Length: 103
Image (cartoon, rainbow, N blue to C red; front, side, top):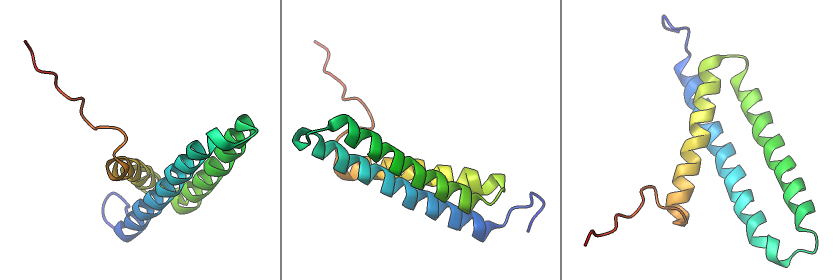
């Protein structure tokens, strides 16, 4: 440990776990949205999917954080990084708006 009381391997593991939780959350969200047109009860699908996705992510972050703020921050950073990576991979949303040529 250093002066900040941070265990760097633990923070790295928290970052990876947060990224895995984020990948799970956003992949499951994509699958849910893709299935919406073909389902009979879209509100039920959305609700159950959200509850399952959110429950898993909250459980992972609470478990990996273990009451230590640096681990929580690292896990949340991993979650956000997973979102950015998946958006770039899937190519649905540009990170910067396209500039329009001025006349």
